[in-house]
Image 1 (tube, each protein chain N blue to C red):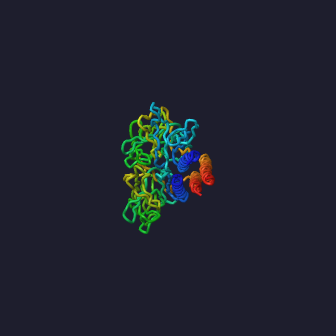
Image 2 (image 1 turned 90 degrees about the vertical axis):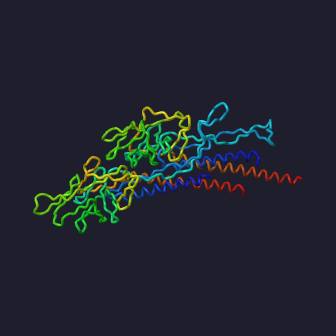
Image 3 (image 1 turned 180 degrees about the vertical axis):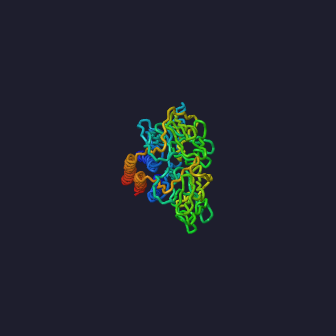
Length: 248
Length: 262
């Protein structure tokens, strides 16, 4: 295909990916602590070449390429659930849980439970990490209260403080599914000095449905217009082949 | 294009959400019912470009990666354990538990079930049974001659017998408590059974440390908050609609491609 078609094709591929990301955002509209994702595009300048030789006098053409996905880290609306083990972080930061292999996972989903052994765990059963390891709730506890700094206490005393950590570059965290993130090597968690957590509440997903819907309409229209370019380029080639064949 | 499949995961999730909410609303006046909440999590991501990967030989790195998600899945439906409001019924065999603990119920299979529905009755033998006729544990039988039953906050059952000045002590109602109440499995009929997740039951007398107290002549209402259920229902329905629009849009984009070859 000629260059115009290729440019339109690169646009279509990028738009398809954007559509997938919008779909993922909408699917996670009701996922606690989910952060909306956006795809950034970049201009890829390519000098047209024929048979591997770049033409010196022709100006480069701009293709579209994906550049990166960025999470919108703004806080979601904090919704009251009244459940004493639901905790939301107000402001920046992540809870830390450890999976079975001991790997630290970071999450903003504060739906916690008490395991059958009395440990404070997330919905996957991973223990929630305090400043000093796991938090164990003694049997027979009638009520658990979590202070605004994350201190977990029962009428009988303080059990520990749910740690809230943050990262220099939050975008470097890798999404691991199940509302969790993992930190790649070299990205270190630093404790947040004055975290604010809210007991009996959950942070809703920060996906804005209206924005996503308008994005989706825009993507679909742009996709159609890019497809029209591919089609008219194809028609042009067809016409050229027919017309040139006549002269011969 | 994954958008089609992603939209489908979203519709599935919202359907479960609506189902859970409708069950809560349907049980809004069920004695001792605990509302449930569906919780969702994002599915695995395909990391096409790792954040921090080198973008040049001079050591510049990508500040962000490219992560493509694949939708949503329900990760759990959990019970909200808050106390429901206590309503007076003045029926002497209506018991509400204020605080932690469950009544134990003997099922016909011999298995023990647990409940917070204290609307108890007497069967033909004078045994205290649940509304379904299952005896509570420990078994307590009220003598036919008794003219009144008193159950105190510590769960002791007394019967007034005509001609006797002091009420007769018939037994002690015990409560079962679990490390993880949310891990109990609902069996229907307001009954729960113990699971590995809940841990085994520890028995204790009402009013004891870690157990609630018994209120005679009262019942615990369901803890469903109808206002929040209705708003959640609206949110779930809107989310369902938006996911269906994603599917429609993705479908139309694919039609656009098909149209190219004509």
